[in-house]
Amino acid sequence: MKKKTINIYKTIMLMIVTMMVTFILTTVFVYNLLKGNITTTHVVAATEGETELIQVLNRFRELIDSEYIGGEVDDQALMEGAIKGYVEALGDPYSVYYTAEEMEDVMAETTGNYVGVGIYIGSDLVNDVIYLWPMEGSPAEKAGIQNDDILLKVNDVSYHASEVDQAVNIMKAGQEGEEVKIQVKRGEEILDFVVKKEAIVLKHVTSEMLADNIGLIKIESFEGEAATEFKEKYEELKQQGMERLIVDVRDNGGGIVQEALKIADYFLEKDQIILVQTGKDGEEKISKSENDPIITEPVVVLINESSASASEIFAAALKENERATLIGTTTYGKGVIQTMRQFTDGSGIKLTTDEFLTPKKNKINGVGVEPDIEVQLDSSVASKPILENDEDNQLQRAIEEIKKK
Image 1: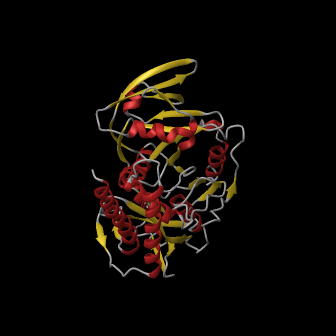
Image 2: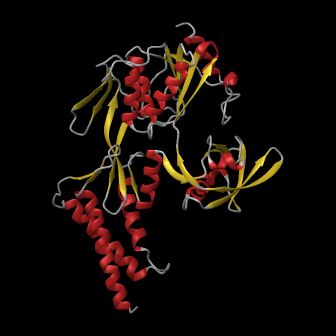
Image 3: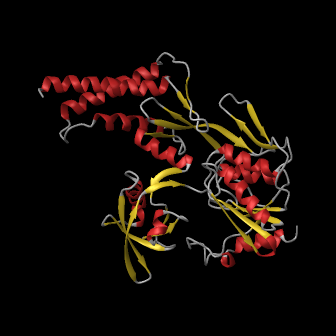
């Protein structure tokens, strides 16, 4: 290719880069997570600030074209980097630009469906260890991988605890039916497994019956069909004779707000306030329970410093409507809601659009939800990836309290 042709190509790509940045600022494609629809809002004229941004990008590109010697320029990478930096400069840790490839992963995680081997992974950075816990019925479990196996290699490549994301990507990348080699350490034994990737449907709710007819439901996240899963688990426990219920949202980082609202609705009387939202216009949007409660048993909710977002909505709704006792530690304090938007090229943006308040209009963002009874997890077990019920002192305190109800 002649140099002149290359320069023309770069000029065209530069125009695409600047047009894409302006596009994000002026045209919004609203992606509805629950319905999967894309709608279009109005297009406005470029502002003076946007024109200045385009000029700055042009100057930088001219410098790159005339002086940069680091190899061929990846125009797509430049475009994506420019947009990522633009959004990151907001200084909001929850507002993120996603490439088309990243957007696919986000949507798979949100809906709870992806191709992989079906393993939960936890990393211990202090001891440089990656722990594995296969999902029930998953390809990993069927291959023989067990809880607390330590990951050594994926496809003959070793990974440190700080590189857990890379290991996960290898196990999730590719198509259904492809195989991945996983090497683990179990005690002093080194084991090798070949696991075939399958379509994985994540389960976000687990349950078990404790002694004295006390049911325990743990909500791992409020994504996918969490509300439907919760109702199913509740009904199973009810059939087993459950008389009291403990709901555990510790270490639950949130998910889809609508799922949290649905689950709270199961507990509350009709027309009780669950959530108060305020957007950029300052107007309040109030969400109330829409149905009579289906759960009437005494309830305790377990929370901790890693309970965030939708978990805080759920916990605060039950606390302030005097429906449950909260036990544990003050929650994370993520009192803002993000809206996911997708563009025609498959990329997308998650943007903070609302702040949420408790039913009594108490602030959560940066504050958190306080427990009714504060119980710190014993330091002797705090670093363990999985706790047995009898060593979980927060759960044991919840059992003590719910027996009084």
